[in-house]
Image 1 (cartoon, rainbow, N blue to C red):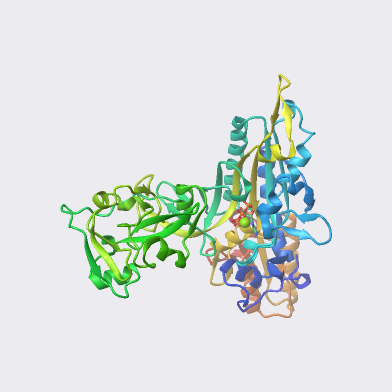
Image 2 (cartoon, rainbow, N blue to C red; image 1 turned 135 degrees about the vertical axis):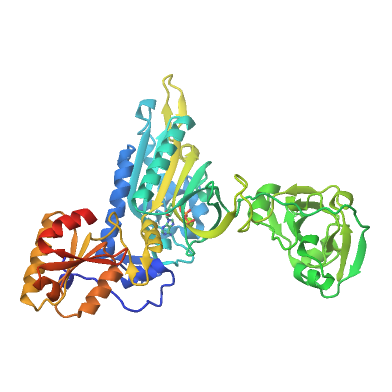
Length: 561
Ligand code: ATP
Ligand code: MG
């Protein structure tokens, strides 16, 4: 492709709308433009990368027996109502005004609709159906560029099986295909076991990339690969110390002391000698939740621990329940259920609120003074704690989800009547799996992991072009002739070449653009080298230059690419 005839609007300045590296680079290198919040146009250079990503996905999906479909994005709302997902998606679902249509955010319903009455015998199963298609989600806060779009490309596949054992096989195939797709895309990723949210399934795994731009926080062990969302992650618990001797309970006036930090400063004690109280309503009954020191209650763990409906108490409810306001509440004399984090089990000589404003109690012995308490894992794992699996050190960081694999089970087949007859003529619901990959997220995550101060560093599989050929002074007829000849020859050899043939920009602009756009290999045709029958090759990743005799150019490239 000739630069002079292409639309590659590179920018020198960092665009004001972009914050994270991948978004900045996509805009600066002329790969993408925003049309409206969360809605993007792929420009020609960026779209070449999108096509390379989708081709890798296609090859790996075909390799596990996937059949490519193209389901419509515009869906009759009626089908979505049958699974209860118009409600489940809520405001995220785009509705088409004046008509009963929705814009599909995913395609379980439509797959089940087509399977119903079409896959009727055990002989019709298993099936793997997939598509690479545009999805619509009215994301409340679209940000981080294409990582969270309102319109985006997803590879979504669906498996249809007779039994849960067969589903295990289909799920495993996807697990392997996903690893190949992300490996081939040149990404460093890890895998997290997860809960399956609005999809309504059982087992699921997320493929994730470490990134400050991520919206999930995960705990990860570099040694054994243990990885979990902090909503559920665990670490080896180190209980609060138990002194040999338990003191008697004693009351201390603590005027204006509201927080654990203030209590520690006032009494000159360590936060591990304190227990913090939070009061929740559990199915309309109060529950006191005790945490060690400054540990916050992890509500994602509290909900499942208690079951039913759980919400924090309103400040105006607290006084009536406990006799005190927040900051002075504690376990002694609390009249309702009390639960605590595991770390407090067996602790003594603790300080906590006295259920009387401006007073605290000391000398609390959990065994002696709070005998009917129940213990649960209720805290959030922090960096530096020990891995539950191998004892090594955990790191807590932000991460982006690249893809997700789910064992759906029969939720959609039951809702939409997708049944098959077994060998004995007995009817069963088809067992489904669902698997998604964000195409734009592969793109953005690749950039997050492959750039330097000059721009993008592409490697072969995703690079828009293999070679960036630069004719330095195109007004010089020898350079013009030679670079055009090399351009033709390289293409005949099968290379994809971007040829900077512009004759109205300086060498500096050309070099900067080449480094910004970041093709793996640059070939520079300049006057000085050409006089001696030579050209310069630069490897973008290593910033390494070498001079090559023209007749050797082809061999050299074979060696490098
Ligand atoms: P997230 O938690 O990031 O919103 P999700 O759980 O809603 O993701 P899925 O419904 O599992 O995502 O969709 C499958 C894949 O589609 C995700 O793993 C992700 O790569 C991609 N994806 C989801 N939402 C978006 C979006 N708004 N923009 C771009 N890609 C997306
Ligand atoms: Mg989402």
